[in-house]
Length: 141
Length: 89
Image 1 (tube, one colour):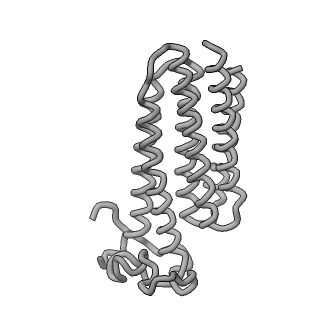
Image 2 (tube, chains in turn orange, red):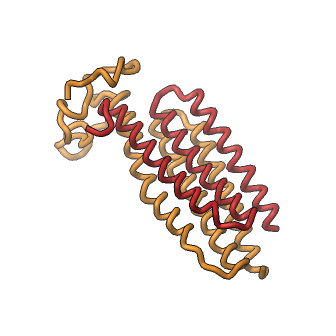
């Protein structure tokens, strides 16, 4: 394997390890759920991206073949991580926060997460400060 | 050189997995636990790809692809179950 490939793979592996560790440490360290959402969804995705780039360069330099699997995994992760972050934020907003405690948005329409689906479909009755009693038994919708 | 960088990355992602596990156990709310499980999936994908580089095989790409699919579907379905009380309405 040529020297430039070794250096590049090493740099990307070290960057990926540092970013993955920072993301997981932020998950433990940050104080409340909405800030906790910030750390892993960005930093860990960067970490996996670094590992994937290192893997592409390694297999290209060692065996001379260009593998597209890493690109597939990277595209899939970059597409799905905002969706999972949005869903987790919605779980937190709808189960733990009240709409009047949130900051008022600039538009007059209010928070789309609460108003879009209407109270009959998406939003539970507030305030469920404890765990909801039994989500299965709620067959009103 | 690559070997020591691989060991460093293995150590980083393993420590990250342990930190995520701590958040799964301690995490005061359900959203924290779901987020920690999702991060565990991402860290496990990174560990699988590192293992593929270590062993020099490409078989782990399919494994990590399946892992990413299952992790995404499980996270979304768990969130949906908590939000709506049902997964497929």
